[in-house]
Length: 469
Image (cartoon, rainbow, N blue to C red):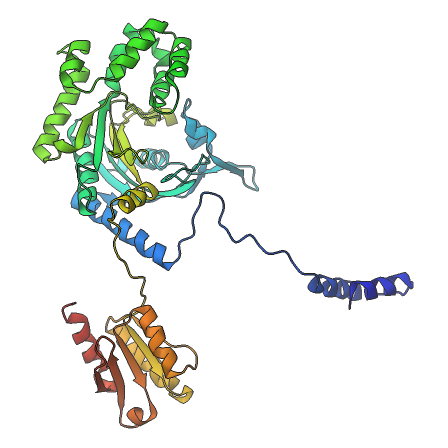
């Protein structure tokens, strides 16, 4: 019934039941066209179509393989956490970038912007039952409401490696080994990617000499982390507000430009613990064989307030992309959550930026999203039960099989198999079936053979064991 017709009935004063009225309203709703749904995902997020998933799986497999090579175990945690877990770390930009919500019980929650606080919560929960050292990794999806740029989105996946319970620089050296091993595995070299190395111990020694009180140390580190994002005059102004004179602010900026150990020793003194720490790490890098990837860069402090020692950041030597990965030492994180501190270090490596870097250097793999190597096709619907049995026996032998689910012509079959990049089609026809056979066609050269249904498992096992060309 049209809207005008329903209005006429009501206007006429006719008595109608509630059920009739509801039916009339449903009729009107059905006849009213609905606006087209916005088909884009939320801003700065992504859909993963099969070809995108193939690339993501390839990347994640490389991450998992590298972690396994270095003896790390995989863990995971909820993407939804207590908001308090992330806002306790005062002085960080992250707390301004949270995706917050409140559940029906009034609990304040947040989508995780990073994995380290969740990891800290897990360690605290079972600390007395965990055998140290912990070498754990994860590939979490993280969410931050920030300005999207190339290689940086509001949601991304991040490869996290962390070691807990060891306070020596051998931990940082091992973490860097994992990051560089991965990059080599995907074809990158030290000519394309470098790793900036510093330690917050430099600022811990230097800032008191420049008039910065201890309570302003963390906030000053955050300012230093923004050196490449803000004009120098704004940084100087902010440092002056933090307790420095304008002259001392310029002295600090000059110190952060140091790129050689000779200049660093001249500034800090050869017996400086910070200098010795950095020299030890570079010596370890030489033993590992990746010292050509490392660059001394004192301006790297990392923005997160919980870092306490060595910090590092992978960078694109061409300068086109922002930080590729980053991490460092964070020995005092657990006390932020009310626990006793435990030595820890780790890094995070985002998926979006590494894909952009691989694109730049033409290193993205040629991947197939093919779900099947064999397509099973019944010529007539009365042969479908046989096709089901054939598909099941092939799958039991370890073959990836696509069973056609509706009547189709033979011409469609071969187009479909070509789209799937299948290697064979198995055709169940009436004449072959009557002889107890199926016809198998190899698509690479068109060769055909009739194989007894009872011997299909044997055929499939031989196919799966044959060397791939």
